[in-house]
Image (cartoon, rainbow, N blue to C red; front, side, top):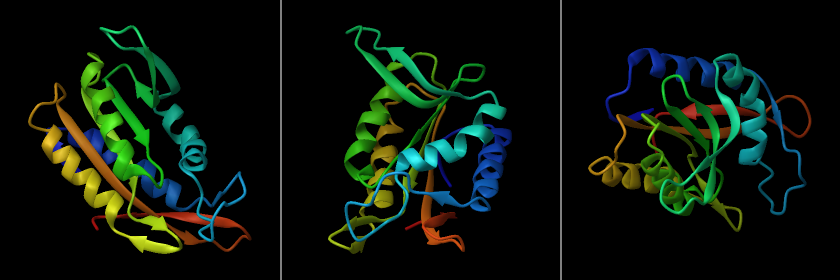
Length: 175
């Protein structure tokens, strides 16, 4: 877990506990794989995390409005009580991270932005370290101008579970 800025240790402990609990529960990919890498999609992980996060007062798929344009956008998970937004990123995290950073920035109620980022990007069945490294670089740049208290990146990966077509979440500390 990488933290840019200052986040309450209780929040970081809570995030660690949610991720550790999820590591024990197999996740099944809902849609058929379009490539030779059949890992679950970010939406599969999002749905798997939903019970643990809603138990902790996070709301799922919260629709918000851009303060200037009036255009709508959405957080995967949002906890209004302390302003924590959580985005579950998928295999294109290296490109999509910027959109999430901007959402954290324009929403005045957001105090802490959390991104769950796949450790690797798979292209043509080849693994690259692009996702997590790119996310950390973007968050480090954003930390200097963000109107939030903290940005948190949690890297994850998948390992085959015992049940057929199911996977276990693995959290990792870095690239």
